Length: 318
Image: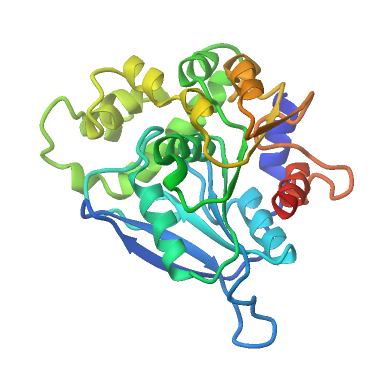
């Protein structure tokens, strides 16, 4: 599990993708960055009715990550127009208020989906796919929005589903390395915008983050995240933000792809019974794949993950 996770992260090559960035301002005064694949003004441009696919990367991921770039190119090959929704601060996107994002905050997702629907009203299908935390947020959004969502289908990959169980798994063995690395990435994003948190009163603890006193994801959430979104504790935040709660309320066909050896989104956190009982859910599990790994024999360790082909075959058929 660790070999494939690390191997893919270190060796998978991000293909060259030319993006056009759009800054979407939100109703709370913040903003997010939408990276659209650049389209030439020629016969190569996709038609106005082409399906549009919104991509939600993982915890600190963004449009430059290899698994995201591969999906953007695969979308184009499938005749779909892809846009990467970079959460606040990720992929060098701007942060203009003292708020990032969380596993339960769906306001930005709701704004992005509505904006994309307005931008391409002739599109014959509005779709979305998320990885890891992005998958959790996507399913949370779908459960909250219900039949009102303009999305017609969704794909969830490497979803941690039950955040209490998933975070507990990061506390032991080699998985602690993932926790430390992800927390370091969160701190790096925070430090680029730390001035916005200057003078924030307790219980916010921005100085703890700046001083390196938040070495785990849980520590960062305890210092910043839960206070930004009104949670009384980290335990309450994890319990109330888990997308496993949303599975019974999914309003559109949803494909869930999970690796049974995923060290960050462990099988123990996956709500198999709820997924089985949900008629709109299709669950695919693999014995191996790690987290965001899924190295495919055909494309090799540097190429697109195996999940790419599955995702676009399903989206094209659903």
